[in-house]
Image (tube, rainbow, N blue to C red; front, side):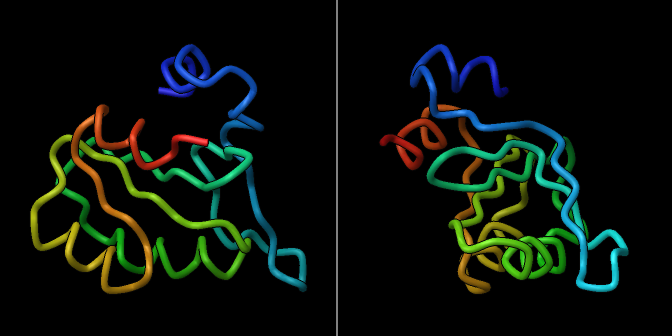
Length: 100
């Protein structure tokens, strides 16, 4: 996924699999892909538990949180959007959302 983003928008990907910590040093969550302008959480399945992950991801950064998953259920995408994130199910939509 990060390679596809980098191919479309060279220089946009900052890092992959980034651990974020709480003030006490414990792990808060991980960012699957960190871009210069957003954080992407990639989901292979229907998105069980993704709402809580969106909230944790928002606590660990100031960038918009995008959840990408081709198998995300519509109800999960709606929950992501309701929590202030952006839920997308196609690569084309993802590339459009992250366009610099």
